[in-house]
Structure formats: structure tokens, C-alpha cells
Amino acid sequence: MATAKRLPSGSWSVNIYVGKDKDGKRKYKRFTGPDKRRVEREAAAYADEHRGEVSADTFGYAARQYIESRANVLSPSTILNYKRINVNYLLPWENLPIEAVDAKLVQEFVNEKSAQLSSKTVHNIYGFITAVVYSVYPDRRFSVTLPAKERKFKDLPDPKKIIMAVHNTKWELPVLLAMWQTLRISEIRGLRYGDISGNILTVHSALVRGEDGYVLKSTTKTYDSTRRLLIPPYIKYLIGDVESHSPDDYIVPYTYNMIYGGFQKSLKAAGLPPMPFHDLRHMSASIMLFLGFPDKLSMERGGWHSNHVLQDRYQHIFTAERLAREREMDNYIEGLLPSDAQRLLADMQHENATRENESSTGTAF
Image (cartoon, rainbow, N blue to C red; front, top):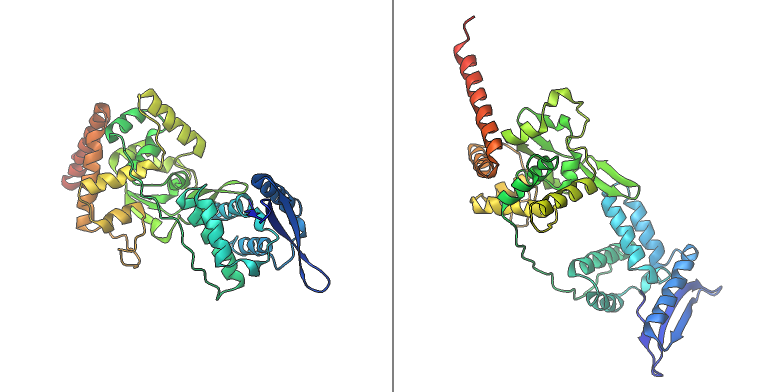
């Protein structure tokens, strides 16, 4: 909402820019009253009602131009988020002259929103504002004090309890892909059978939310998120026979709500508190830290980006060190699996060893 200012009389006032007169002078519609919130609501309602009358020199016009110009290069979820920011928080700026957006105005806005919203949300809104202004005035820079970023610590549950909670349910595979393979839920939903080659899984797609629902994006969240992973035997067992599926078939053919809801129901049935599905990635990172994984290997497995890592192109080569670390991760998670799953793994390993022995010595007929 627009921020009302107190007048010497004690009343509150908001000015909404409505364009220019025939002489080129700016025109404003003023809303005044004794109640600050009511004045702000009336101003916001007026701005919303007159959205279609915005001239080309306003913030609202520049914001929509900025979003539209990047619709084909940014993620659908990013575009959707920009539109939500513009409608939910910047509607009162719809008719504001873009040249009037200066450091003082932005600082006042940041101060107001910092008392209402999380630090992350304020940073996101500020980022959008500056991007819009820079798209019109490339040389304009703001010196604005933003709220300090909040450092949060998560109390993660025992990973064995999570595994037991989803064992033998259709949510076991997506949960283990997140907790074991460090995949995001959008990446899990974007996996297709054609992404598997032998024991290697290539993560390069994601199902992300757009304006018209979920769409398959042929790239992951960031450059570093596109990666190759070794598939542990148990996860390969849960995936099933790859050859019996079309390469374009989804490995996890469930909606976001189905996976999230099923996961929460499994936790509740096991007597565990609810937790965000994304926390499974944090759990995976914690396990790698516990096992002493080097930072670069941890970030390569999880597709994380860090300023502490050289900005080179990961080659995704499975070195001896990486193979050893992958086996450590597999051994740890396999040790947490229920006894029937461990017996299944033992049988699989025995069959593989027998097959390898027969292929090396030859079988008599």
C-alpha cells in the first residue's frame, strides 16, 4: 500500500500520480483523511481501478515492460514472482513517475516493509524495484540500507525416522531422491527415463510453476544445478525397469501437492512433526558435512553455487575421490534402510557378483 504522510493539521495524505496536463505538468489525485490506513486503502483502490490509464513515464508501465521483455529468457516461476511483487506490493506506484523513484522514496518504502515482511521478501522487492529503474535509467544507483538477512538454524529430524516413515509408500522414491541425491522437488518432478544412462542420472530439467500452471523447463534453477549423479542401487531398484518406459515418461509422475501432501501424511502417521520437503536437501547437505565431503564435491552433488568456489565449469568427471565419497554416502543411507530393503540390496549385490563372475570366467553349457 502507498505510505501516507502526516500533515501539520494531523490528517494523513497520499498523492497518486494521474499523468500530465496539456502543458506537460504532472497531475496528482490527493487522498486525505484522519485515518492513515483508510487513506492508504482508498489510494491503492484508485490506483488499481485506473491501471489501464497509466502513461509511459510511470513505474507501472516500466515494470510491465521490464517483465515482458524478459519473459522468454527467465524462468516462468521468476516471471510469476515478479508479477506478484508488482501487484501485491507496488500497486500504489502504478501511476508514480519513474523519474520520481529515488533513494529517499525507496528507503522509506524499505523501512515500512521491513516492519511487515521478512528480510528475504524485502530484499526481493528491492531487487525488482532497482531492476525496473535501471532498465529505464541505467546510470541511476541507490544507496539504501536494507534489513539484515536473517540467519536461521533448522532442527532436522533423525534421517532414519524419515526413511522409515516413507518406506514402501509411493513417496519413498521422491523423498530419497531429495535426501540421498540432493534434488529439488522441481528437479524430481522433471526427471524422465531418458535422463538415465546406465548408472548415471543427468539432472537438467525442472517442472516449475508459471502463470498457467506447471511447465517443464529444459534447464535447472542455476547453471551449477545441471549435473550428473551416480544412481545408488536401491534408488535404481525403486525407479524400476528403464527400458520398459518411453524416454519422455516422468520417473515421478505426481503433482507437487501430491508429493508434499503424501510426505506430510507419512510423517504424521509415523508420529513425526511436519517439515518442508525442501528440508530434505538440507538434510542431505548435513549428511555430507557429517561424512567430511569436500565443499566442492558437496556443491557439485547438490547443484549449489558459492562465491567461495571458482566460477569454472564443472566437468562432472567421476574421479576416484568422488567415487569413494559417493560410496560413503550410499553406505550411510543404506545403513539407515529398513531390514527388508537391506536384504534386497544384499540379494542384488550377490546377483551382480555372480553375473560378473560368470562373464569373466565363462559359463559351461
